[in-house]
Image (tube, rainbow, N blue to C red):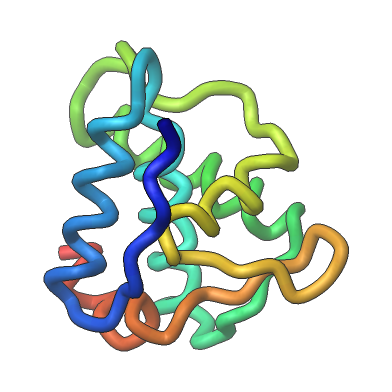
Length: 117
């Protein structure tokens, strides 16, 4: 049964959604890596809308960073698929604003520094 996404309003809600992403990651850590990449990109550029190719670049950068930090690549990352952006909507992190264009939700923008620490 699919769980209806909760309304994300606070930093605690954002962290809860990241924990849910990790729990739902069955074989590879994909959604949390994408989330980390998007938040880092937002902090670097202050842009809150992303194209699919920008999501791909952010995801790939986050995967490289995680592999380097963990010193292994077991269960980290997979080949990027254009459906990943839309799948992030179930966590309240991204919402579609056009064809393969997404906007980072306000609570995640407001708590990006804390979430990436």
